[in-house]
Image (cartoon, rainbow, N blue to C red):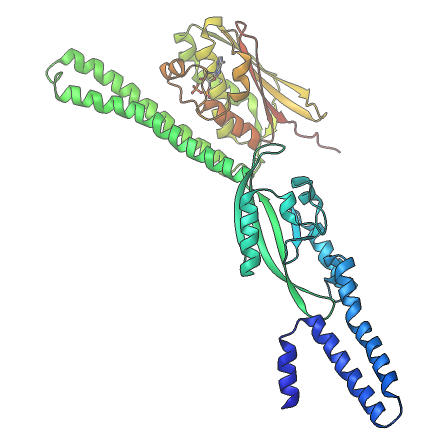
Length: 430
Ligand code: ADP
């Protein structure tokens, strides 16, 4: 009964105090027995007891005053070292704090994120965002996980998500204590992808709505004022046909783009000869070339040029490049398509197919953005040509899937050259 009562009283005390109390109680009982049996004088017993009190209480008071919180972690040095190694080895920035919010460990990624982090100092001195401090305060108070997102401006704008997880860590005196593990995750690529997806849906809807509005406008006119006007009907039906074709083309391009994106990680492995593919595309575009009064010059080797490729995608790729050259570079009167072997900057062999026109060219500020979806130098011109703004984006995705590169060079007033580069098949040994 007595043992139960004392253990329940002790259990309410902090670990270290309980430990000291047991030592003192045992020492007091032993000394009382020695005094009772006359083995030790009361004065000596008191002196010894004072020494025992000092030995039991002073070290952990001193310990608290002079050592860092880090040393109390881990029931043994191996555990403490393991905790430190785990924090150091985490791939994302990670900081381990004690219950008071003081830093115990942090890894190299965390010190890059917050260079002012110091061991044994309050983390909030280094992490100044009010969202972090609030989340940390709440996590400590409730001993529950918390999340916070904030925009970090240094060195560049980044969206960071912070996760605070309370973890139970063993302490030196055999007990355990809550520590707070803060991990930081860069959400910028995810947010960018979300923004791009939202932009893409908005752009696609806008592009589809324009011909749709034209179609329903003409339907209204044909049902109303132009009902009995055979000449107007003929003209409007022609425009409606062009608008419907544009919508169909847009949907085709969107589907092709999503198909190529879906298989982006699977590199085509069929050996294909690109010479007949290019010739087939050029032959198919001959009517457009003669309509625009442009001559297509083909400068291809007489022998097969093999690459690992997807025939259908290569047809789309060359069709887009040659058609663009005929549409936007028509004033040059000539388009040259050539293929040659060359070396990439890293020394690897590649096959380069260049489509060169002699039209007005493209101003340098547009070059980096040409492969963005729906990007056009002149929206009106592109629409008038039946363009969707997706052609070069599709070309870029196809080239990437083939593990190649797309080079765009242009001198304003002197035409443009679009070059698709594909890895060369290594020559078979033996
Ligand atoms: P579009 O469907 O508008 O042709 P693309 O993605 O194929 O879309 O091309 C994007 C834009 O790049 C075009 O709108 C045009 O402004 C420009 N462009 C593409 N090829 C050429 C070229 N050979 N000469 C000049 N401008 C070009």
